[in-house]
Length: 226
Image (cartoon, rainbow, N blue to C red; front, side):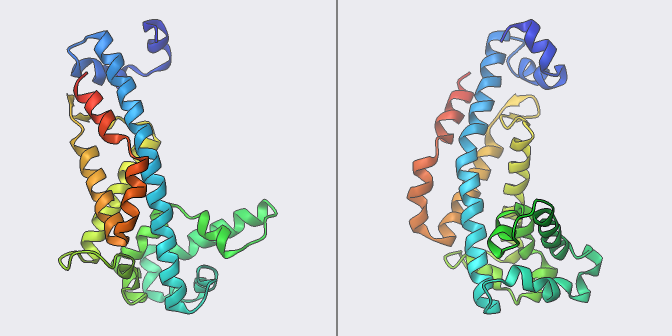
């Protein structure tokens, strides 16, 4: 990209980090900026597929627990309305209701499948928050049958929340190749390791599917050799 275009369409505070990390070398800075985009691109397949698999595994567990394939709709008046959730402003119940309202506005039939698919990642990891976890009798932890014994609700939630925050960063075009102003992909590597741990704890047989989609290692190498 020509410098004039870069200065016009990319904010200086954003791009100056790349210049600072490369000693104000315009060629290296542009390569680093492009490398960050490619690393973000490489993360999307494994993050999106993890969300789908995690969500579906959790839905299977909840359907079994409530003996109800339509639990996500029917539990609005069940555990999602428990008085203990008042302090959280009934986050789950409101999330389901908001999706239903959106479907009504778009004249789309309300089905459990649609309500499930339209929930964001934050809704699903909320099953590991203590107040929800207690009401569903710890059922969400059974999504990870192969986890080490040392891992519990809190540690699983911490990993899921780190992944959620990382996912939000890349969705908002934030750089993932820095620690302060130094070229460093350690956070991205840490997230990748957590992702693969959680995948293996759901089902080790899923790992080859993810590795077949995963080009993050090559992109990290390209960044660290800029």
